[in-house]
Image (cartoon, rainbow, N blue to C red; front, top):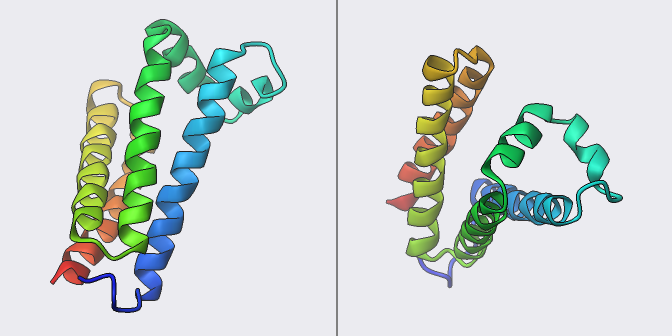
Length: 131
């Protein structure tokens, strides 16, 4: 992949997906930094995440900075058709896929299994597009 070629629609959509993920991480960071603030209602979307972040404490902010930065870099890399962008996106998706599997079997949260075909399809697309 070179940055001189026009990106296919699938790559553009994946870049937007990772940019959206980076934005959600930023919102989460602000909500964690200012508990009880204007963004507090977002925890209604995923109360389990709120509890997990509270258990982790301030390290959850660092975790979200790392995840958000990785998503932002993947978005830029995909948008510019850089090989490292595809590699980073694949790494993020693979880690997420493993996390979904662990959540399903360790925490017995079968809802996370929905991420397997979705993440798998994204990984397959990136592997094909990588050629």
